[in-house]
Image (cartoon, rainbow, N blue to C red; front, side, top):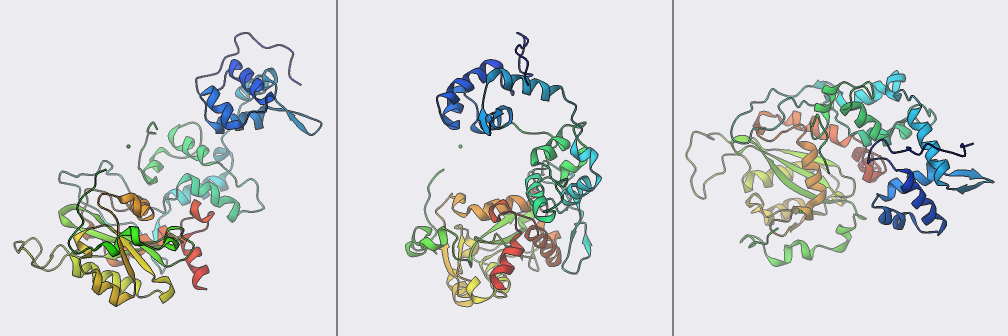
Length: 391
């Protein structure tokens, strides 16, 4: 039971925590039956903060919930004083699970481990993080959400994603080494605190194949087989192609090696694209890769207006795909693909030569992404989601 008095100096540890005055406001507004969001707006706090406060610090009486400011402050003060050893520090099994999924090596289809090649950093687009390394690189939220699926009975194998982040960023709050931050997608060792123009369409794109003409069934992701694609670019005109299925988030990578004579033969207008990602090379790479899928999983492809898709009529004939193009300077119209490209930068940083990666290495990276659980798939993996469709 809470004491009938509290210190007059009962103040929050910082502005991050609720004060007694704020708790009194919450009690009054809650008694008036205002909703969580309305209380949050009134106090200038997030709705999740208010919801958490009402859930954690309300007094339970006769099966009901009675929120009183003084009792809530007492509970909060007591919790702040209570020593709380990190769960990662006290649970070796949980710590090993988290570390393996943050920093475990990726593997090829036959199970052999791949460390990734040594990349050369130079040029004006030198990457900001030169200690990045290839790893399974699950995000803390993916790890936290996957635990109940992998350990449905063992309640000790539970941790929040925030606890994992704090163990990484605040040394002393957990048992994870600081160098594991290099395995996060951003590669940041510190947390960052928490905005387009229209242009003329390319000559090879007609109005009937613009994204505005794309069927509604593609937009709602209800029907599988609709893909988004793009190129990620590297040093010295190197590139890797990416294909992402909208429903399952399944990813395939296109190997685009340079052609013979690149760097030796002068560029010629309308000549061959020796960098390896010209229209013909990209068309052939997409055809080779996507034709392996069942026909019902080859419905459409949405791309930006890059010149590498100039041979889209031939691609449509070769693969049976309907091709659609985004509006100029509108990457959000391929949001799934843009997000995936961000994930891929863990393995292929900006400012590096992407031609250093073999086709086998690209397959290993795609496999690693397809084995990561996704929030959008209720913590299933893209590979599991695709298998369910094919099976």
